[in-house]
Image 1 (cartoon, protein in one colour):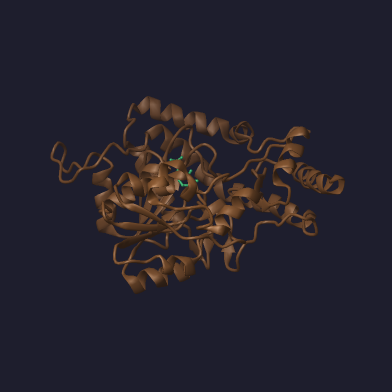
Image 2 (image 1 turned 30 degrees about the horizontal axis):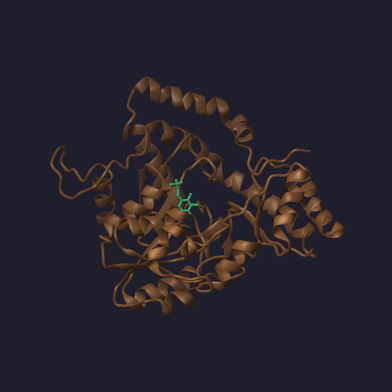
Length: 368
Ligand SMILES: *Cc1c(COP(=O)(O)O)cnc(C)c1O
C-alpha cells in the first residue's frame, strides 16, 4: 500500500466540478485583481473566523509581513517568537529591519512557552508573534495577559491553524491580527499562493487594504509605502468553494488522528498532545519518536510518506547567525528537531490506511 504524506489529487476529485465552474466564472468576468470573488471570499472567511474584517493577500508570508508593517515594526524594535516554526515567521520580522527574539517552546504542545516569552521582554519589545503550530492554538490566554501587562501587540501566525479553536475562540481572533496561508499544503489551500489577515479593528483593516495595494488611497495618491500584496481573484474563487468543505475535512483529520492516538498509545513514540480547551485541526500529526531517522527510512521502504517539520531550529540557521544565538540556547526546540516526525493525516486518508501506517510504526519498534 502506497500512502503519501498528502494527496491533493484525491481532494480535487471531491470538488472538481464546483471549482472548475468557479474558475470559469472568474475567466468570464475577466476581473482578476481584487474583484468580486475576493470580496465574497473575504466576507465568508471573516464570518468563519468570527472576526470583523478579512483582507486577502498574496501569501501567508505576506500576511505576516503586512501585519507587521501595519503595526509599524521597524529597525530597533524586537518581536518575540518561537524558534520552532517555518522560516517565514521570523523572516518577516528581520525583513523589516527589526530583531526576531526567540523564546523556547513547550515540549508537549510544541508551541511557544508563555513563561519563556516574559523573560525575553525588554523596553524594545513591540510585538509577540506566537505560531499555532501543526494546527493547535498556542496558550493565548497567558500570552494575551502578558501582552496586556506590557502593552504589546499580538500577531498570530495562524498559517497552520485555520478553523482551530481554544476555549471557543477561533485561531486568528485573539491578537491584533491573525495571519493565514493558503499554500497548497495547508488545510485550506489554493491553486498556488494566497494568504489572508483577519482583524477586529476597523482602523487596522483599512490600513491593511491600503498597504496591500501600494499604499494608495485614492488611486495614484500614496499615503504610506505599501506593496503589491493582492490576492488573485482566481485563488479567492477556489478558496471560497473549499471553505465550505473545510470543517468536514478538519473533522476527518481529527478522526485519523484518533486512530493513531489509539493504536500508538502504548508504543515507544509520543503522540501529539492537544491541550485542554483546544480543538486542533491537525495540520500535521507530529509525533516524537526514538530512533526517528531510522523510523522514517522504514516508513519510506514501506511506501509511507512522512516528513520532518522542522529539522533545524531558526536560531541556528545560517541566515540568523548575526543574532548571536548558540546551540543550547533553546534546548526544547533543539531536541524536538531531532525527534519529530509527521505522519499522513490528510482528510482523504482512509481509516484502513491510517491503521496500516500506525501498525507499520509499531512493526518498526518490534523489529528494532
Ligand atoms: C506556510 C507557513 C507560512 C508561510 O505561508 P506561505 O503562504 O507559504 O507564504 C508562515 N508560517 C507558518 C507557520 C507556515 O506554516
